[in-house]
Amino acid sequence: MGTTSAAAVTTAFSTARVPLQDRLPLWEDYNKRSLIGLSCRTLASDGLVAAQRNLRMPRLRFTEIRGNDHVVERSQENIRTVPAETLPLCLLLEGEAFYYHSGGCETFSAGDAILYDADQPFIYGFSTNMRQIILDVPRSLYSERTGQSGLAAPLVLRAGPGSPLTEHTRTAVTTIHHALQAPPENPNAMEDGCLDLFDLIIGNHPSSITGGYLLSAREYIRNHLHEADLSASRISHGIGISERHLARVFAANDTTVGKDVLAIRLRRAAEMLADPKLRSAQVGTIAAATGFASAAHFSRSFKQAYGCTPREARGA
Image (cartoon, rainbow, N blue to C red):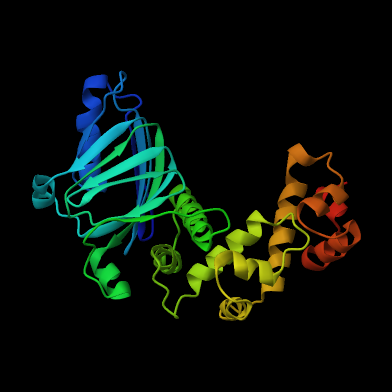
């Protein structure tokens, strides 16, 4: 299955309806065409049950993979016959994983990430059901942004509660997931933002980054929208920059933190008012759920933005 949007092409494959004996070879063949060449094994009694969705754009490639327990291996033969010339950043969303390479073995869990060189041999395994999102960066772009030609060893990135790394990773996952579901008509801006997020996640912080911080700030706002005391200070702390730097990021996009917070609150409120499942919810309840200090403030702001009151927007 595939869809095309200007310079973005999506493909997908699942083993769910494939005969048991064909699952591994067909999965390997799909990976060879859409991701990288590798070998796959599983000890699961029902074989490999996995699904993959890919988005190929001019510079980057996004992938989401779900599956049961399995192991993939990229051997010297795979590398020789199907070179990748990429550095995948794998964001593990569910499961437990290990990554065996020439220098040792790394273990990590849901919430962690690993960056590795796809043209160095490895065995990557999952001992449980798994889900991951991959941001695949070409070696040439990696070198351009970091000044390094590759990685001598994989880089495991572990984030904890309240860490800016967690915010940047969450933003990357959300951005990539949305792109996989609805490919962008013009992917350039999305690619720029995701490359900024890539830099932030791996610890490369060039002063030129604005798009990545903007994406993370807006994701932080959406995740804390119900909090009436959401402030520029909290947002800047959440994504790991100063309040002054945050103001510059928004100014570079012709807006301010306050304007953006209000716009996102109102957009979410409008979605809630239009939701048939929330038809019985009081306007005051929706105001509180979107972080407005009072129903009166919400109604005034809503009318100024949309030209009607919340009740009029709902048609009641």
